[in-house]
Image 1 (cartoon, protein in one colour):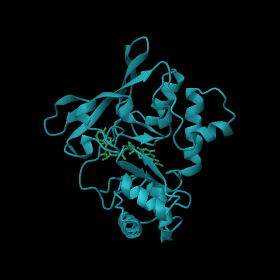
Image 2: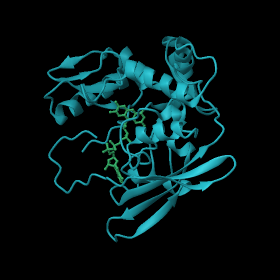
Image 3: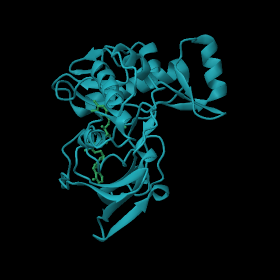
Length: 283
Ligand SMILES: Cc1cc2nc3c(=O)[nH]c(=O)nc-3n(C[C@H](O)[C@H](O)[C@H](O)COP(=O)(O)OP(=O)(O)OC[C@H]3O[C@@H](n4cnc5c(N)ncnc54)[C@H](O)[C@@H]3O)c2cc1C
């Protein structure tokens, strides 16, 4: 979230705790998690209990209740891959109801709670299914290289999680030290035809094929190429190691960061013809 003004309403901090196994079968368990549980505490719990599925999502800041809002994702895994259902309270009626995976309409950094149902429900608990036998997903990003650097020969939940933690700590600024919201923009999805055309003029462009016709482009690469990495004006800036992260060095106002984000969007559009969409909720 990026606040541009004092919020003219009531702010609730969800403190609903609890991690509970409610179904246990030969190969998986269904876990009910209170929305106020810290996401990374859940990841640690899953590893301690030898349950697989969320180890790649280690160290994402925030609560379990916020995780379905934008279908949190990292290193080739998204919440939706373990999600079973959630319970939420409708603010107008104060009635509780369940939403299954289909009803949440998960997409890339998206759910119905960011769309049609924005501001209408408070998520109170999330149900995820974790596996007793892991299927490791280490093909994304630098995980394999990091595992090699760590001298790991046999994969475990613990080692994959630690590799993700190491990579994140080396790349992302700690919000406790420098104000930031992680990736400011979503990685734009463009047609594969446009990607191939851009590749001719920019051979180092970074993209991931997501279907026969579409490619997801690394927004950080686009911003870096547009010359923004390490930029600073007053206390608002672009992180020196990760161009996708806007940072507040101290006293920048929310509006200054929004202004900077618009300048970044305009220059990326001018250079590549690609529109960047914020991932951050601007309030
Ligand atoms: C350094 C850094 C790295 C990050 N890396 C990643 C990453 O790798 N992948 C990724 O997906 N995200 C990432 N993020 C973004 C962030 O971690 C997620 O968006 C996270 O889910 C936010 O959790 P929160 O509890 O802080 O939610 P908040 O920021 O407090 O809230 C986010 C939105 O969800 C709503 N909300 C929160 N809880 C509830 C609830 N219980 N019911 C209804 N609405 C609710 C809020 O009103 C708000 O609109 C990163 C952020 C930072 C700072």
